[in-house]
Image (tube, rainbow, N blue to C red; front, side):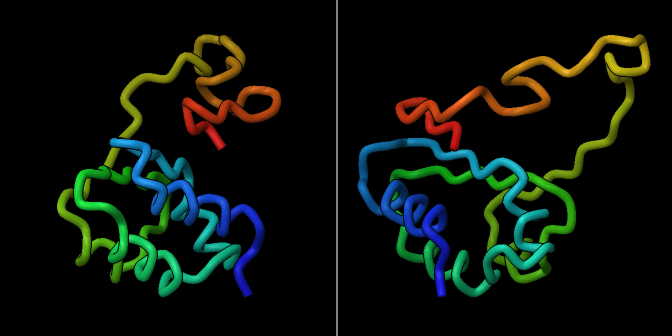
Length: 105
């Protein structure tokens, strides 16, 4: 059974209103079984042609790696946290509430 947020993301993807959608940390959410990779694959297969979907997070499943047009791996070289700078809203953790038009869900 799909959870409410996944249904909401599905509606956003299928709406045709957007050119780019970032599913930030979706791989880790899948890793912890908040949704199934099959559900996400089905959704991506039905997305509008002009929509670019960017999925971030550790533990990307092999199925999505094979399916993707582009896969990158990031490595930390320098991080502001090591200099004592704390996390900032919108950079390392979400804004309070939801920003619909920016699609930060």
